[in-house]
Amino acid sequence: MNRREALSRVALILGGTVAGANAFLEGCKPGDRKAGTAGTFREGDIAYLDEIAETIIPTTDTPGAKAARVGTFMTVMVNDCYDETDQRVFFEGMQQLNKASSKKFGKPFMDIDAAERKTLLTEIDAEAKEYMTKKKPEESKHYFQMMKELTLLGYFTSEIGATQALRYIAVPGKYEGCVPYQKGDRAWAT
Image (cartoon, rainbow, N blue to C red; front, side, top):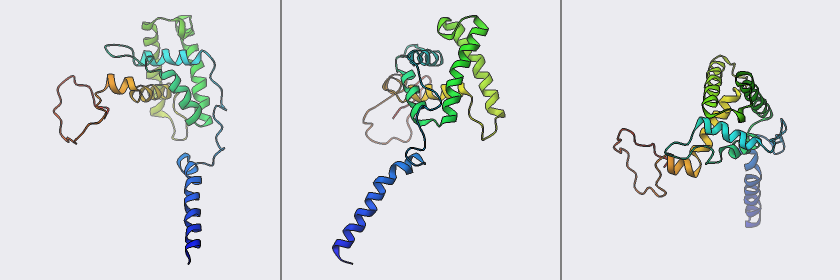
């Protein structure tokens, strides 16, 4: 084999690696999944999702989920990462949550106060936990389980969540395998 053949084979291998990386990372061919095909987010949906997230992680001595813009994070994750079935469950769940609020309090979720929101989401969370214990593996998650997971992921991976709710050192330095824990200490983000 001469140098020209070797270089062309290396170029072919590297080209295949770069071109196939997207398909490998996504687990499907590009174009198989169409983002947002199960529905689309409307103008008020980010504020609605922010309020749901804020009820799950409220502002206390640290900023809550709304300050971390978790609603925006949820829309990106649902559109870009969820398959069509899960997208549909999520969009229908947004409507179901509003219907549950109207049924229980006579008003949509955005119009009820914080205590009523907490009561409603606590009931729906109990319903979701029961559903998740009985669901078959091929069935989709409960919509509230998705909302709760996205809220936690969005909050604790945000700058606010990582630096203010958790302890964070940008460059931690040396590795310490055993660090003393004092009751009440926040968990480490790094």
